[in-house]
Length: 385
Ligand SMILES: *Cc1c(COP(=O)(O)O)cnc(C)c1O
Image (cartoon, rainbow, N blue to C red; front, top):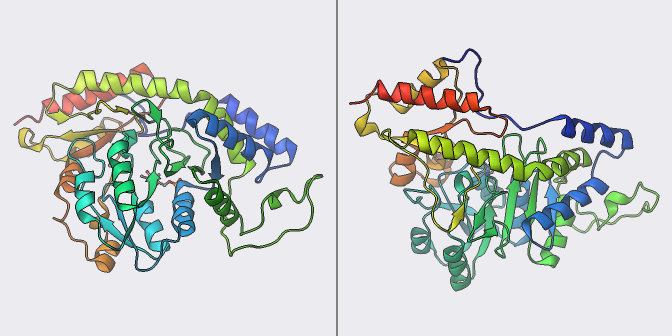
């Protein structure tokens, strides 16, 4: 058994990020500025889209997207119960009503067949999540979008490196919001970025993200800027800073390398755990997985150990894990305000009750991977029915 605790997640930070931060500090331009613009350009090239907006978080992006598309009171937005609270909170912040639809049994992504059945006259938007980094079926999603004239806001918090049929998530004509939070595949500490295909809408969102000030007002303290600005809307404080962008530019350079390591780790887990009574993640033929998470599910009918005890035993083996996610309809606020109840979304509930996310991040060593595999095997094999 390993001596030191293996955290469930660690950001991949190195001397390159340190140097970039120090250089940025020495430039004395630390809030939104030239590096944020550079980062936006680099990201748009990476994703193969004309334009990207860098923001303070994925949540901020989704919030602004719903507001800028005029979604508000009386409107319904369909999303998944298998997500983090942010996906639902932004719908509520916009004043709209969240409608939940169950997930697919294998991918954990929202079930688009059931989405179609949930569409009403009030439905304005769908907010799908690319769970764990496995793309939703974009062709199916966009068919629903076009047939019912719906707005799509993709929660791509896990999907900065995901593809669907060879094209990157974010390049399918929908507003797509990425997260660069500390534990995500690419990090800026806190941060996010959004693809907005319509340039006029993008401009409106950019203005909303910085107090509602007219374009380029961030530049007003520089040599080229002017003191004048005008407020065009009561905006928000949702901009990215150059300190974050400095990190992002380095992380973007390393993204290919980091993804290659994630893939290696996921492949080894799948090879070495598939003979156990656990369900390892499936990848549908259309998806290139970003391996933000490696969610295994315990097949409880073959085991004498519960999911919670399994997590506890792994912790005793000095292995950290997590659970993704406590379904939205299990949380008291959403139950009290929207009448959600356990039992409503059986696939999401079964997924949650069986699920454990194993450690998966680029700086894990081969010995770390070995330790995870050995501990999982030992605990499972000593608890067979
Ligand atoms: C992390 C996460 C978010 C929130 O991202 P922030 O950048 O922290 O706002 C939203 N949705 C999902 C599914 C996430 O995992």
